[in-house]
Length: 266
Image (tube, rainbow, N blue to C red; front, side, top):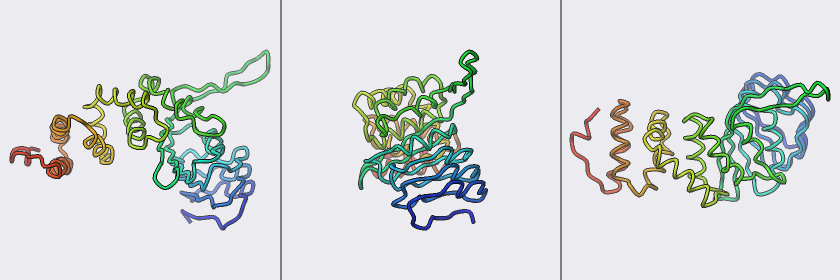
């Protein structure tokens, strides 16, 4: 059985679903207070984790070797978020985290992939974990069991050096589209990058058919005419008639005009 939901109970026992190679998503039920040791160990097909709240005790290795987890949804983020930090601790792959705050507010955060190794300290006979890449630092963005949004956003300049456009484009879009905890200074940094790399970012959004990001920037820009023109040129270069159609429809809804040559330029 690929997908399953738990029956209502307060704890998920040690090794409860360990080695399950079919489960693709897990819905942790309301009222859960503990996920036991290695509860989802080696669940290699697991991709999505739904959490009802963040105040769940996560025992050692609960999500160890769940290398395909790519999305975590936290329903109530306005309380204790300890478990989010503990789940991420076992993972170094790229993960998108969506946190809901009440009915209308939400945050979407991308935690980039990173590499790590263990360095031996021979005199002390201990090993220290050393991470490489901005993703390792992003996973440290918690304070008093809550997501530290200022710290997360402060890593943007570091990410611009170490991460590629596929990561940067999504971090930027998520933070500007879902600006929970976003300070004016951090928003300025993201927008400055957008202004400097507009063509590169637009090309990525359009190549990946990320229409939500494309729509957001078209709606929010003060230079809509110039941006639409650039976007249509990119769509034409990419040979994407459906994107051109989307852009022309968008322009029409705003009362814009376009020529017949634009309509059929592929």
